[in-house]
Amino acid sequence: MKNSHSESYAAAGVDVTAGYEAVKRIKPMVESTYIPGVLGTLGGFGGMFAPDVAGMKKPVLVSGTDGVGTKLRLAMLMGKHDTIGIDCVAMCVNDIICGGAAPLFFLDYIACGKNDPVRITKIVSGITEGCRQSECALVGGETAEHPGVMPDEDYDVAGFAVGIVDEEKIIDGKQLSEGDALIGLASTGVHSNGFSLVRKVFDVEHADLTAPVEELGGKGLGETLLTPTRIYVKAVKALLKAGVELHAISHITGGGFYENVPRMMTDGLTARIELSSFPRLPIFDLIQKKGGIPERDMYNTFNMGIGMILAVPAGEVSKALELLQAAGEQAYQIGSVVSGDAGVELV
Image (cartoon, rainbow, N blue to C red):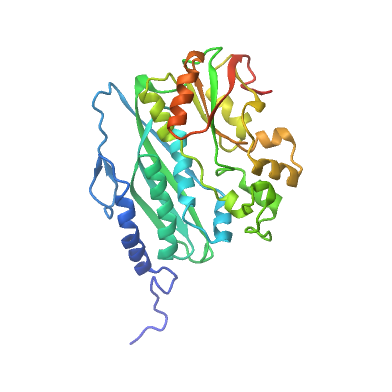
């Protein structure tokens, strides 16, 4: 006798076949990120990686995990899902390169209300692009449907990266000294922090995100805000390979300068940053003007045009700037390390 109350996974809102279709679509993209060390192919229960530790005295694994935050809302409003994955990778690998660790592999987690294979493929295309930019392999991931918990069109993206460094080469600020120079690497925009404030300032739910904005060089607000986070891994690796002494590195994320720069300092040392030494990106002027935001709050929330700061010996500044330029980075000498307990001073 047929049970009129019988249920199925599909009836509960989870489409298993959509999951299979998504995996089929993303497999070639995932495999395009493979680097030496990847074992097996996509589809196993665990991503396997055998790191090459030849020449290392004491290999240390460095890990980082992060998401994209409410920047996702801009992607949904714009219907553009192919760059948000770059942001997800960037937020993880930019953190672990601060310790001098070269990223090895990445895993992603996508939660969605309904599995749309086309949209999932676009999201993963960004993740694989981010992995290629940071020379790490995408070795696995998870796409989870949450029917009844998330609206069908909603999703969230998070990731996890693992890198490796020889213990004696860890960058931890212990070599910092008064007189070291600070080099700032240009950001591409807001990156992936401060979007709750950005969304409020521009009322993005009701704003025209595609209309050209004069202050943004004719670009639309949505396009400008969705510009992917810059990945600095190759640039830092180029400096390390060339033998440049990197005494400390700070990734300028949530909390801006006031929270992140002191994290690279050691007791008794302060980063003195000259604000006139690098260009502020127009998007930050627009945010400040539109929101009436105090100057300190801007530098306590956003990267203001500098996505990463490196501390190097004063005598290595020219060499570092040349190498960074060759690596495709816009870089500036933005200050120096001085004695003091403030952690950071903006002058």
